[in-house]
Image (cartoon, rainbow, N blue to C red; front, side, top):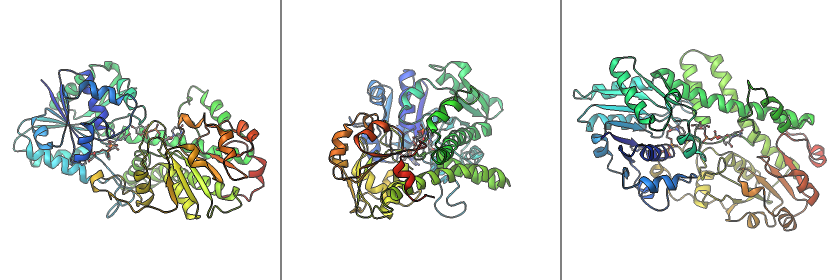
Length: 480
Ligand code: NAD
Ligand code: UDX
């Protein structure tokens, strides 16, 4: 029986291993973590992450061939294949701070693997890492190995949150990189056999280690670049009277471009895009490629511009001040169908509005008040460290209130900012909401989810990203 152990029971480790356990009943899968709270949650009725379909998969396998444990060393030492899916945050200090990947957690996992291993192992990079990380990991493992053979593979994960289970069950591709030696190729074959339980062989791409590592950074950079491209267009649409939805549709009909990932928004968020592009930028700089670095840096600059532009639009529309005004924030997660708030654009928008002294009333169906308060108090990049290292009781911001209902959030508010595209925001009773708001009542739709014409008929002043502007908004002083 093959035994798999995954170090890191997070958004990637948990769902990925649950699906491997589901599809490979003869393989024993242990997911281990240093966070006791997280492991307890995986073993409880309330899983630590919200992901459609995840509960069902975990319930089917947990206790049979899927185990969650804090006994990291035992499970690592017993495993044939060790996946490493720990945090790879952006460095906050020292060389490369604000750009380079912090491999502290990865390195400590590698050292531990070397310490406890008594048999040959395949070590799989599941975390997103800088290109050439495998070389460093190999050195750590082989220098401490006591004669054990370690084969390193790069098997980056392409799942997106909110659709993780579907993405894992029906991946566009699985990528496996390994050494071009007989042992390296044998290791690739072993991992390929695991995925072949449910993924067709032609969807499994095998490459060298560096191509696999770099492909992950490249894929995220290309995806984020599409969003920054459409968001840049959204600013031009507002200035010219074009409609970004129509432009995206027309552009996306070109089969060479394709229709996906062209939705203009308040900006992209999530734990990956910014971190991975910064990492790519750093690697380009380190390799003496400043022009390439600047090219990718621009994707992040446009994303920051889009978030600032949104805040400026809100403030300038409301007579150039939101001081003391109640603003309802609908949606805080970085996208719908997840409770994840890492790098959510809502953080920057809320901080921008708080900077102008607004009072915020926030509603998100999946995000707790504690999480929101923590996000709004935390310093940039501090979020991506193991949860037990994060401040547990953040000091509450007085101007921020969190409620569990969109109607409560919007009561007596001057304006509404829609920051996540939750389906329920499309079907709210906006007449009721309008009746209970201060007038003039504003809606700033950062995700283009509401029917703006319908809302205008009710009496709202509506701003939709990249759409022709309301006469009211046109008359307001121009924004940055
Ligand atoms: P996460 O923070 O949800 O999970 C990481 C887990 O690793 C944490 O629970 C932490 O406690 C644990 N951990 C850290 N050091 C450890 C150690 N030494 N021993 C045991 N456990 C340890 O992170 P995530 O979102 O699952 O991301 C993990 C990696 O996968 C990152 O490199 C990320 O870039 C990449 N990735 C993430 C996504 C995504 O959608 N979240 C998608 C693809 C790739
Ligand atoms: C991303 C990649 O899609 C995934 O392949 C990788 O493994 C991890 O990073 P994720 O961050 O979970 O996944 O979600 P994704 O669907 O990519 O959305 C990222 C952000 O972009 C969200 O804030 C989303 O709202 C935004 N977005 C997405 C847009 O603003 N417009 C779009 O058209 C698509």
